Length: 42
Image 1 (cartoon, rainbow, N blue to C red):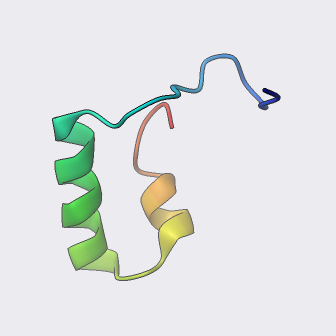
Image 2 (image 1 turned 60 degrees about the horizontal axis):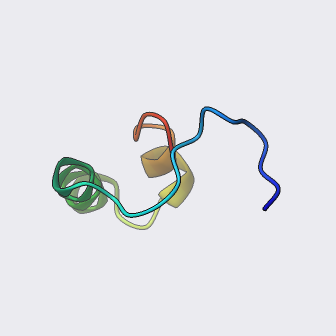
């Protein structure tokens, strides 16, 4: 698999990451590029 950075985490999201994504989605809506910028290491 090719990816840009070896430091990017792959695999399932942790419970904390899922909670963060849900909170950010409630706040920002479907602005996924903004959400992605706030999920460290992904």
